[in-house]
Length: 143
Image 1: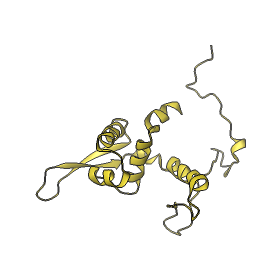
Image 2: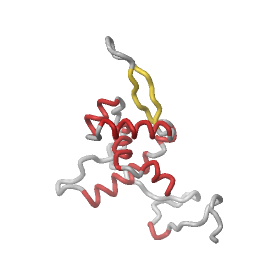
Image 3: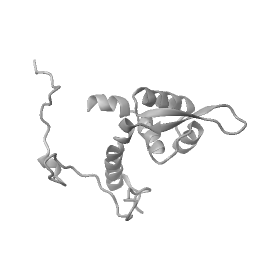
Image 4: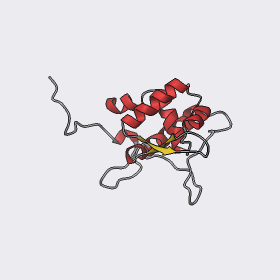
């Protein structure tokens, strides 16, 4: 978790990813939608590209110089459930009295989407208290 937060820990990183997830891909558009300063945005985009979450794709509008847009990589797309869970948590605890500004819905039926926990054996919608951390294969022995 610590390593992941090293990439996502800055508020602006999550804000930039949110914009790209909703289809905002060009620097000026991300800047306008996110409110992140140009310098911070430039730094975050470079870091997200370096980390392999985004890739730069060249484009050129008629009569202007070549530019880049930013697209999610498979590694970046794997963050969608994380951002969905974060949005669900924020909607529960930080929404305005009228409700959340954005809802995650299933494209086909428009039903709200909820993040949930499930195990590899197929048990779904596990209560939080039934999920516990255990040392993984990369764990270092305690000294």
